[in-house]
Length: 127
Image 1 (cartoon, rainbow, N blue to C red):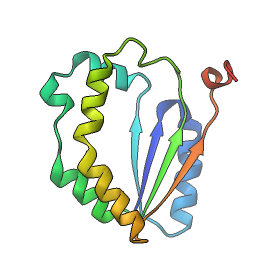
Image 2: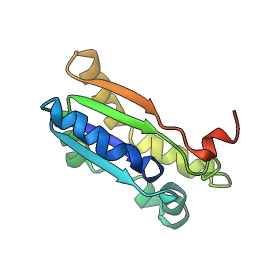
Image 3: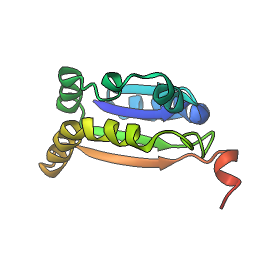
């Protein structure tokens, strides 16, 4: 299974990427997230929601995926400006077991990953 993370601002790349994955015979699962969703989450989530760890979901995802594609694109490079850094750190810390499982699978040679940059006007403004 190929797990793909792609933001809304990279939408024009979604269908061609899906086509390539399907033509290669793989099974894509897409995580398509709207622009601004990260800021909205931190502004409205309670502490327990920020640190919640859906173990069965995340561990199952690691078990199933053999490749991860992360499309890097930003509609607003400053989306998280002003967000409490402690909230962001707590979120990252809560995901440590997931990252460790992914890293272990990669070290075992059972999973690979690709980072792809999709340029946006916001990203081009500051070079």
